[in-house]
Image 1: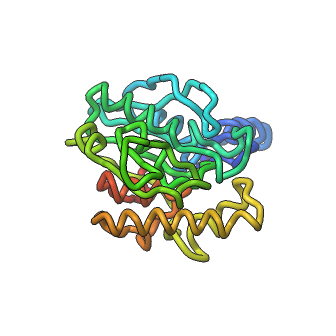
Image 2: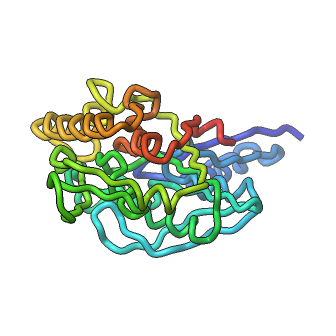
Length: 272
């Protein structure tokens, strides 16, 4: 018996990996009834990552309450394998096609923080975070806020805020003490095939912000805010990952996770 292999990712905003597989299987069986089609769902780190991983590894899906990138309450799932490692997909909360108000100046990565927080509270010590397919441009400040990091637009005092893309440039102080305490002993591995740096003409703003809803007039402001926030982190003594491959993934979540959580970046497609 002859065999064929279908390995498919999703088509952003249209068909999921499993939709594509079902369509191909139906057509294949009609044209080649005496042959067998072997199908394998994959994801490069964007939408469908958790569903794909769950077909390969043994473990369980965990659902928890969180928010989307506009702050609306939603339920999202992540996966915990038999070794108690968690696999979390940023797009499960921040998916661009599912974002009601597409504007990277006002969207936030806050919701992903709840998934990470839930996994840590369940005793997970290694978290794989897939970065693709997001609607944000906040350098991960939203999710870091949930995990304990604090940001202030004031030089002193207890006025702490949660930055978004359009307000990154106003951040004057950062405090990672609660973040460091909560995430102590947790290993983070980032999965993405986006190689863009954080800043510049090839960075997350100028390459990806348009497709997330930014107008031409918004780009300079978003880039300026991102650079100002990055400069503050370097001046505060944190390592500079802005030029590292993948720093610009998911609106800068890649850089934020490497900078404040010592996350390791790996290829999403090679996670399989």
